[in-house]
Each structure stands twice: as structure tokens, then as C-alpha cells.
Image (cartoon, rainbow, N blue to C red; front, side, top):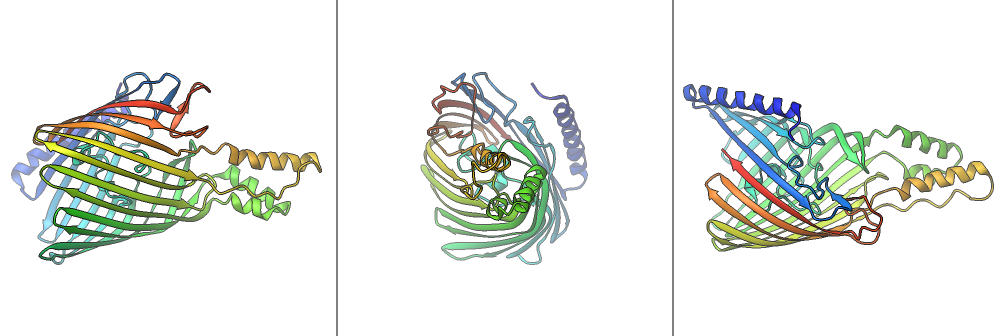
Length: 398
């Protein structure tokens, strides 16, 4: 069921839609576009949830509507704004993009304002399901809610060639928003946030590599206070292991091949951050598909492995009740950290009903190991960390 606040937002977007269309009739400098997706999900196990999907049909997790306005103020100056309304309560509806584009030459482009953070290959279109073949991008490589916007500047330069083209992008900025870390919603501020991205197109091949980094300060007052107590007792290693300020880095590589008949796509990434609640994570996916218009069928495999830093072993046990309490409280912080290492095998089909409208059906076998959370929320301790997830997605661009 759509929340009242989202219903209100959807009504507002419709008003914007008709207003934009009317205005565009008088001024061809304004271009209006949009996208929407309706995603139904079902998990075939009553003992757990997976990304909030359970053994009932859910439509409120990844369904959304987006509207975009592009205004060409001058030949080399344009404005872009994008609004998105989410049905997922964990994602805020509102302005997603709001930036100016200055194009002094055909090869050089500058953007200034709020933009999507270009961490991975499909970051820019993660909400536009029509742009990729799968019902959803794999959680093991594209963790939900990881992709934020940033406020800053981006520059791109294109080097065209007869057989290949090269595009280089660089950006700098910051972001300040709430994120979910180890099932806690906390404020995170990243400054000196920057990245470098390279794209190479060669015949039917597309390659991408990128590096991103920033200094992040996560607001965890209780953890900071406990760290100060440990430092006062002289347990500096333990106190340092609970720091909430440090460097965050993301590394990414991808390769895609596609022709009229089939495609092969692969991507890997490494994410690391100097925080106790954020694990180092390695993820990748490999997907192959066959086109038989108006259908495409595909098979995918994705996997990620998450590791936390080890707890320091310097607080003695058995000397006093106070030290025992400190040691047990310190160790409990590490014991409660969720390990989301998992893998997924996926089969799916896409039907392009007409230009701009597609229907996708997908089934994924999700597997975790041992007591790892593996993105599951467990309702029964006997749950074996294995379940089938069924997804049906209707994608629309206009």
C-alpha cells in the first residue's frame, strides 16, 4: 500500500508533468522526461526476510516514479532537475539531481550542483530499471541505499577515435546525509570527496574503471563516548579500533560486450572504510544473455565477501569487575556486527512490450554461509541461509 506522503508526492509529480508539457509547447528549450517502475517481490521462505521481501507479495520496496526537466538556457549552458518518489520508507523522496551543465567545446563538459555519485557502472541509472536487462541490479555488487548524491563539480573530457573513444571524468564535492550502518540510521558527512572515472568504447566493447575516496565522519555518539573511556584507561588500541572518522575508498572495474544477438557483462568492486561498523567488501557479478526480439533471457551470478577489522586483545579479564565489564562491552560491539557475505544465482527474461515499456521476470537463489546474515533478517534460528526470491518488474520511460 502506498503511503499518504508518497501519494501526495505522486500527485505533485503529475501536476509538474502536465505543467511541463504545456510549457514545452511554447518553448522547445524545455525538455521533459520521466521513468517509473513497479516491482513485485516474493520470498519463498517464512523463516526470513531478504531486503524486506518476505513470503507475501510486496510492491512497496523498489517501486518508484521519477520526473526530469532539462532546460537549454544557452547553446552551451543547460539546467537539469530530477525528482523521485519512492515507495520504500528507507529512501527519501524529493530532489535527486539539480545541476548546471556548461559545455565550452564538444569534447569538454562541466557540471555543477547535486549529482548522482558515479561509484559503479550503473550508478547513474540505478533507479531507471528500463536501462538494464535485469529486474534489479544484484545486491552483492550494488547494495541498496549505498548510492547517494553529492554536491559539487564534475568535469568530463572525451577523446574520439576511429576505432575507439575515451572519456575521462573527475569530480570533487561533499555529501551530508543519513545512512544505514549495521541496522542503525546515522548521519554521515564526507568532505574532500573526489573520484576519477575512465570509459573506453571499442567496437562492441565498453570498459570502465574508477577510484573514489573521501574523509567520512559518522555520528555515533555512544561509540565515541565509549572509545574515550577506553582511552582514559590506557587501552589505546581498543579505543582506536572504534574510531568514527576516517578514509572511505571505492575501487571499480567493469567490462561489457553486446551485439544484436547476445551480451556479456561483468563488474567488480572493492569498498573499504576506516570504521568499525563498515566492513571491507569485495563484490562482483557476471551475466550473459541472449536477445530474441522482443524478448531477452539471461543468467547471472553475483557474490560478495565482507570482513571486519579484528577486535584488539588488550583488556585483561579476571582482574576486576570493572575491567571485565569494559572487555565484555568492547567485545559485544564486534560480536553484533552483521556479516553480509552471500551469493546469488539468477535466471530471468525481459519482454520489450513496446518502445519505452518492458516487463521483466526473475528468480534468484540467494545463499549465505554459517551464521552470516547474508542480507537476511532471520525469524527462525533454524533458517539455513538459503531462499528463492521471485521478482516481477514493469519498467516505463517516457
